[in-house]
Length: 438
View (cartoon, rainbow, N blue to C red):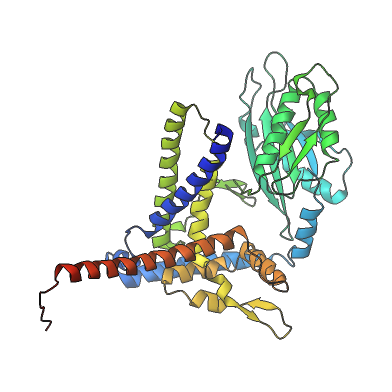
């Protein structure tokens, strides 16, 4: 078998092996809720946790109350189906503010040039996301380019994703960096990472080469999951990128956004502060162990692949970490499909109260009370209710629920088989020996 054929098979085997390890991490022995509550006063602990839950519920409901309406599912689907390769690209740099005596972010270029008033309102916020650290900057001679992303959520709940490449433009001496920000309603980091690689490569030659590339790219439609698009645009045929660029969209694209931006306080939140009380303890411990397993496996794989002279695929590691979080939510809310009930109109409606009450864990109930009030969960359920006319469709999450249920049934069956084998073995060993059971 050729190396090119062995590689995909090897990756698939690794994925299955890692999913099994993640499953075992959640099944391993950890301190139970009862064990932890035994170490402190049960009454005091419950009082603190209930107080924290009420605070978070109040905050979530206030956020909802500020919005008169949400982005409808139909509107979100239209945005995805009619999506171009990108909506617009903004180039941001820095200019010195003599009044404040420091550098401020400013837009220096955009593609396309003309946008609507609504789009223009969105574009005003982008420079500050491209340079949240503008006050720290000064001209530099060299700078290693970096890639980062952010999400803009409108008042109606619709989202725009910003994929950014910060780089130092060509030239000599100390100069200020630029950020190329690609705005799109589609979350697809790997594809836009490739596009930004090409932008950076062309920017090293000239901004005109970037212009030619982005003008052609603006006319392209976003490829379907697993598909690709070819872009060919160059003013100088002697350049190395005269060959068409192939932009590949992954079949399974997952978000990689690690950060919370508090716009009211103009600050970045690494943690909210109530994680220790709002997250279910057992599952949190299982998640922590699963993530450590993913990182350990990545380190071992890297060491082994260096010897085999094989490159380590960063996407595999990211997907492993994503699998750990998917498993976390499978355990937390994998029973949600059992709580859709037919309405008088004939469609399926989600029973939120029944969903929350169906779990026996108090900490899981507290978390679900808050989580089911969020817009994220509401849109997730809204999509399922809309699909109910054609039958509930299986997403990646639903597939993992099914896999998890199968693994649980198999492990129980294996336990029964092992008990039977043990009984048969004991029966064979004790053959001819009469045992009186009192």
